[in-house]
Length: 502
Image (tube, rainbow, N blue to C red; front, side, top):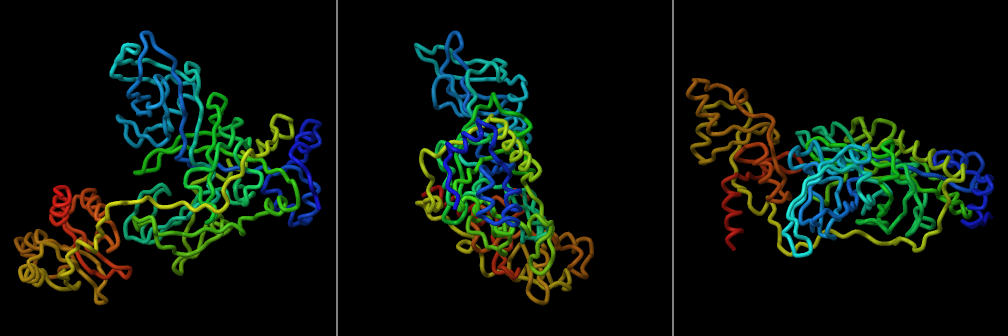
């Protein structure tokens, strides 16, 4: 059995005899030679990931102006940064949006612009004090002009990530990208076999103080990341590094359509092969790493899972879902993750990167908890009108008019012979058809692409859908698409008005 120390490995880095391979190469080597022989031959295994890491940002120190200012609010290219730190320090987050350009530009773009050497407009306001009399400033700065630009990312390098699909009838726009209706695609994230934490699942060599590759420069693990949930296989890391030393090759801003901005970031961690256990851990394959495909059309944290799936299946391009082959797409770049692992490998072989032992181990049994909510959130099923009238497809406009008059509803869901929703008509649709003497079949005048909610959706989700689509009612359907109720804009307005007056 192999036993070696990090210092022994560092000595081999110094004398040029270290043997370094990537995690992808280690999987093949262990399959060929076995765990024990691979442990004897390999000193370090490098990992890498290159994906959307929203929880990314930079602390900036601008230096003092003359006369000095104690910044109360600050904007960089119209993107607000947080200033509740010190007089001329601020933290700009990757997902903060521009007040002028909205979702097309945000904090991640400011960070990339600074790294690219571009000038950025700094605006700040203040309330003024005796020692900081200035109340506003506007100037142009570059990365060279700031004293420090320290990247501090509260949550990066997810051990693995849930995959996403969309069981509704309309496309939705999420942090997992655009999800096509009726489970038209499956989106996933993470590097699988190259994922840093998947290659050290017990966090034996990755912990506080571990030296890492971050954005093309050396960085460090600060602590476990926010939402660190190793009990379910979803560990995360909080990391830091010097933006001034990073490279745009491994750090790029991006926008997810109708969702917002994010930062694509290259992150890699060397795994020292201290013994046979570490060799076995780093032999993990894409087939060994599994996750769940969830229905992201359900706007709740406790989404229903479609099925378990391996990264090998996801990377194949198609997965079986609900009896059909569904195309998969990765939000991460495996090509760039591999580039990170190879770049880190070359640094170690060339003696430019040495390993560090963790100063403190990360938690192995923690589970992230949901937010504590002291006020109960009403659900659609609590406020919907259950006495909803429907009409079957194929009926006439005259019959729909009689139904609307009889039941005194302005909205009439249209169902098929099995009772499943296929469309909706309004009193206005019917009145217009009658005025134009189009009294025959109902089908031509009904809206087929119906916006719906489920009974367990929060009321505020229903309110947002009404506002977003400029409609006045939402049929409530169950998992079989049977109509079980309806909510209206008028009803929700009354509910919200009562809530605000209490």
